[in-house]
Image (cartoon, rainbow, N blue to C red; front, side, top):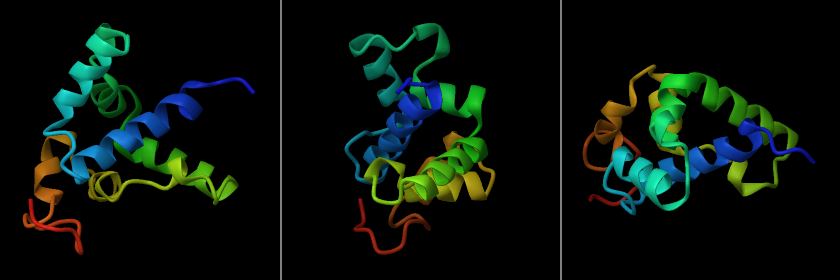
Length: 113
């Protein structure tokens, strides 16, 4: 199978949203720095989080992930992050991510940071 940007990078970005939800990553820019400096993501694209917001758009990212989830319901990396869902459905920028963390009005059922 051919690895298209959607099939390869969208799960990567979704996983990055999960690391923000779970406080593994402190902020989206940290994910971008790790991927551009450590894994060879093209720095001219700004990192995967910046790329997802500026070149793809969070609503489009979520819509595509949901399409793949319907096609492959038992594949965990196609289950969208709740943080991504919240931002995309409210059409908020990635910079608003902290407002959707536990204890700050978002992600019910999660522990407080």
